[in-house]
Length: 346
Image 1 (cartoon, rainbow, N blue to C red):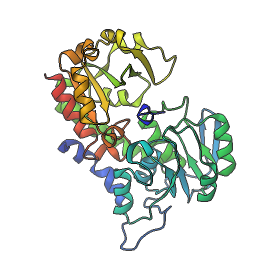
Image 2 (tube, rainbow, N blue to C red):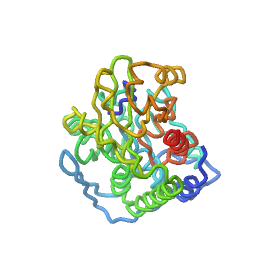
Image 3 (cartoon, helix red, strand yellow):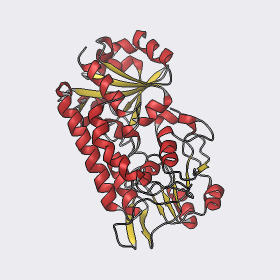
Image 4 (cartoon, one colour):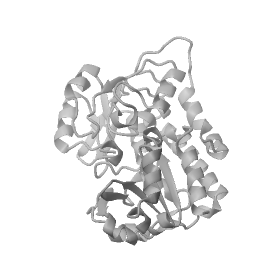
């Protein structure tokens, strides 16, 4: 799961991703559309089979009522031209009954009826089967989630369900887009989304040569422990696209045994050897306190001021990891790129 549950404007990036949002905006009409509306046609031939950690799922025909669970598949579906009828509630980020801002903007721009919010306790560990049944989906997408095999089997009794490729909460943002687009029969649209994002990130890397080969670590501090994300986590993989390298110390300290994060005590944080670190905090007060905390100052990059602080739950969610829509959100990747540039040049 994303720890955030227990946890801009950059012209180059916006220009590079304009095509992505234009694709999602095709076909706007003056009248409201029902949830489940599509704006881009299929590019693949059904049936389609998706391999995943629990076996394989056959999707016999183009789905009309898609439900999503976990993180990122909602946005990947929208960017591929499909507006889900039911999506996971993002309780930690925006609270009960609210949509993520970039998701709400997408539905409203196309005048599509807002989706049903599937209750989530904030951890993604409890699946609301009754609500899934009531939504009457013909496809359930959970490629970046934490569903168990038992949950997968129960969901599959409701509708064909697509799980993650290998381990829970470790699917890359690229694979989330690719898997979602393929399951919807829109692989070409998924490839175009990724191509546009890759170009934008390459442009950002070129515009910020100060990132090249700098080592980086991503941290989620708590009062008594600090969590480090591993190379398996999409938060770090997106930073390598900008030119950074994951600090070797992260792998050396890793106690997760193949997980996407691990916890360590502050007594050991002086071993976090990185040119820069990214931290995530709910509010400015917490972020400011961290920079003055003697325990945190044991981290070399923090002591030297090479810290990019992502503050606020919406901003954290926009880059933890980015999704097909949050790349272009004003408080998302463009703001993080700016913070990173300032951090490494201090």
